[in-house]
Picture 1 (cartoon, rainbow, N blue to C red):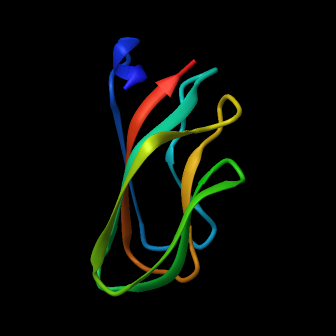
Picture 2: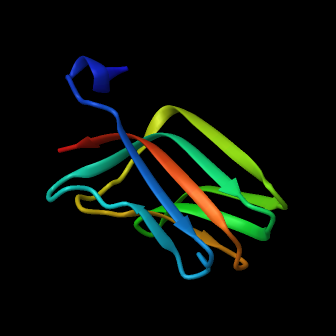
Length: 109
């Protein structure tokens, strides 16, 4: 992967929420940085959150449906990279419910 070749270090970002209907940021890049997501893990704890969206800024990078306890693991063969600098990565759900999200990837300049 080109990010390893450039000497970038993988970054792990975590968030927990009981209500992500308005969106919960899980990755805020450092100043003048961009987010490059390679993997996502979304965990649900005994709740039905219905549809959820993972976004970079206003762009939806993944949309799924999850009912009940479980996990959604995503591995992007090609990293999803924010188009503009300082753009947050966040999750937004249709219904309230307990969720965790782990974002794995790189911050690039």
